[in-house]
Image (cartoon, rainbow, N blue to C red; front, side, top):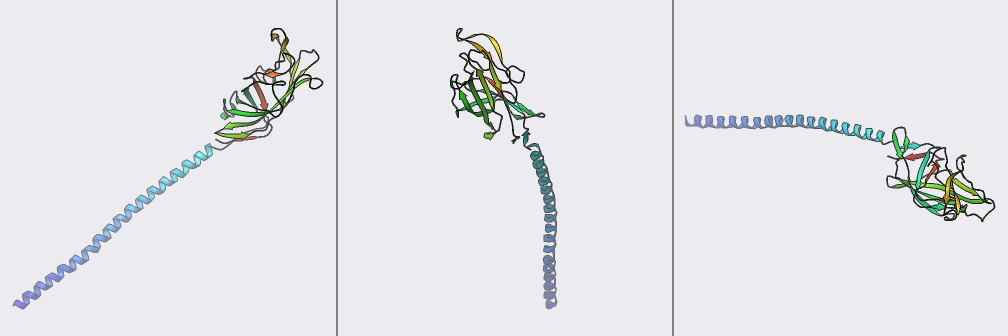
Length: 234
């Protein structure tokens, strides 16, 4: 009788042990399944976020495509210092700022106030050569987004005839116009000669010839014509 009781106890113990062992893998399997589902959900969400970021990046790249300023575009510059046939020397550099926005469509390619640099390519005061005084300048670069962007422009040439003729001519891009503003300069020592280009006041600046030498005062507006397309990054 006692042996049977011991055998029954051992049987029950073994049975409970087997049940406990088989139960653990089921719980682990359930956990794995739940974990896998959560991982799949997280993976899908991450992919959607990556797709959105990629789309946003592509949109930004499309918006930031460079603007191309075509040849023939006019850039009006306000001189930072006075230039003149007698004041300046060939090879001298000058600076200034863009006087008004340069637009490509509705976008501002070159903003007003952008710093510019240029070179005096020729300067001859009256008496140095037959025919009068000459001042010739060009634009070399425009500072955009913190970098100097090289630019090619047509030479802007100002000339004043000598031998008592009260006239001044500015040549640039085929345009030339001379006219007497009126009044006397330097206390009656000479006539003030105004030179305008492009048919509008301020379009090309004013050249003053107090003694028939050419002078462009600081802040004079001078227009330069771009001869090569200019790519502007945004």
